[in-house]
Picture: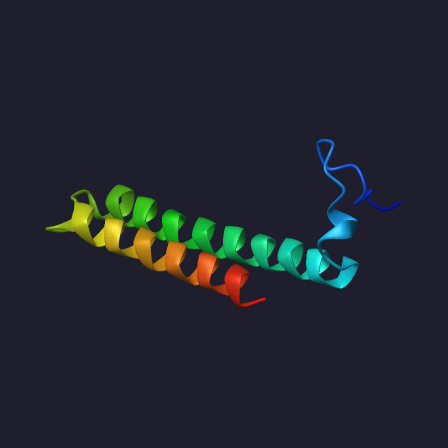
Length: 79
């Protein structure tokens, strides 16, 4: 079974993107989602297991999020 690229919320994506490009976007989104989950789980578990929060963890978490956003959007735009 395959998804229909001609009916994505009423938009025909097949007119704008090739099927292999859409598959690439989908696979890379899954990889980034998984990597984000591991990084987030590591931040959460370090707090739970360590019993205290690392100094300046909030700004460092925001920097990590910004770096992830740059990688994701840069990768999508470079395709």
